[in-house]
Image (cartoon, rainbow, N blue to C red; front, side, top):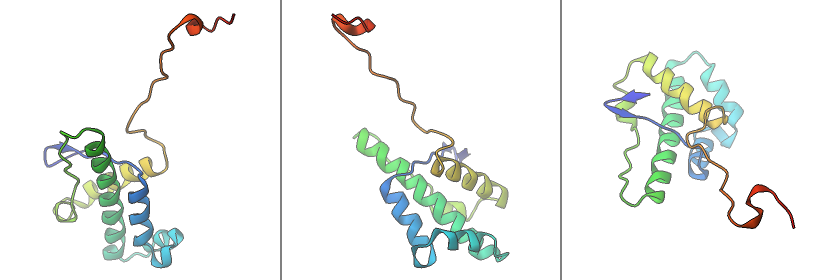
Length: 123
């Protein structure tokens, strides 16, 4: 999703996972579900924002580690607070999809083999 002129992407890193568990009372993710279903919009927004920020930071930090010329620019809580509720919900859905592994951020290819047995021939 494009927010403020840039594509926001997510990655479920160890750091992002730890940050998300810290959002949950007593580190219990089922309590996050309860907060999302509480009907208290402020609590729901806090969970959604925390989740989105953690997953965005995960992607951006990983990219900066892989490419030293990359300048991380994760979405911030302040930016999210200026979005519409629909935009927040779309970001949250995207971060949840990545969390659940439903939408890969990076595609991998099998390495190409070299040498005599590259075609699976055995000798």
